[in-house]
Length: 146
Image (cartoon, rainbow, N blue to C red; front, side):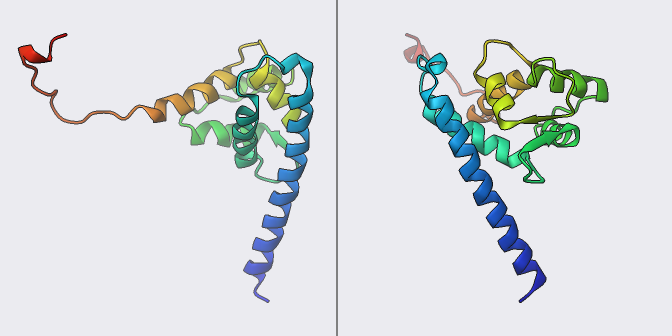
């Protein structure tokens, strides 16, 4: 069998394992009374899971400093090393760690603290939703007025 096909199958297997693991973490959050008032929690968790899996490039379950750097560069928000360290500290709640896990990520996204990463990820989707009009503005007439 071709090595590329074997590698692709292994990658798919790792992604499906990760999907199952992250779904089980989502289930814990869905049953947590702390988040009972959260509006549309199930779809938010699914969106967060997909975003997390997109940037957990080594499929080890944690995002490290380089993963965070790539995440932000892909979103068009490059940061310095010191800014990345501050973001990492925000995500893990001030702990001195070089990685964050999915639970840390969910706590940040659903928590009350405003971290820079949370704000970037929340507004990333909103910026893509509004199509920009091109060309000159349309001509208005008196009948267009309310």
